[in-house]
Length: 256
Image (cartoon, rainbow, N blue to C red; front, top):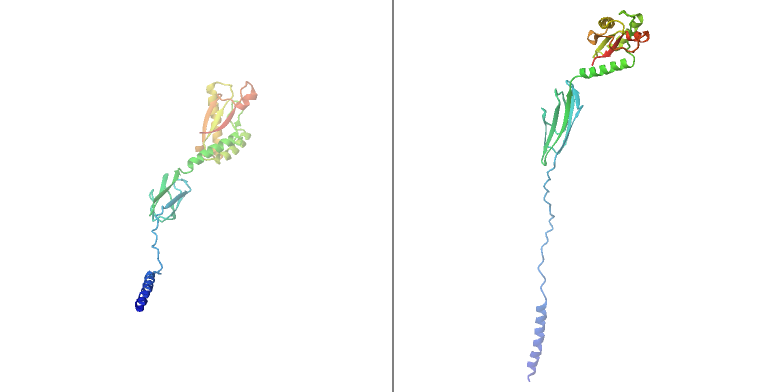
């Protein structure tokens, strides 16, 4: 066999091996571009917030002609309205009012999240004349019950005031004048002796004499009324001077 042919044949596998090895090596993948630009987050959409409102009145009870102060405060409100004749107001504030009748004030706050409301009531009462009248009546009645306003006593078949009775009436007048809204009934009483008609007349003279002295002592005529009970209402019941002396009297009562 030709030597040159053998050499050629031997080299063929080597070449094929080299080509095979070269063909088995993978090509590196292409480089991927990396974006290093910082990401900016989109602004979050604000959530709708429910508003709040609070309203108060101080004082909540007033006399007619007096004043009260409305105070209110709100949060997250774009507008505030107070009914009852007030109208649109700032989100927070106060207002002095003088309502002529009892009124409920409602504050309404509106915002992006909806609306809220709160109420307060102002009670209007008459001026203190009526309250003073009740107070005077009760106070004068206590003075009578406690013995600070005392009855006076008369001699048999007489309607004249004794010096001692006049001293008592001077003190009574000072108490009565302290409570000008109270009316006092001056009651004339008698003992059981004599006819009913006579004792009614005698009781009237005693009541009138007592009333006249109180008027002279400065008590207003509008505070005094005279009334006779004759022998109808004895202070004590018996049939001798022990009781009779206590029944001949001018007694004081508060008119209700």
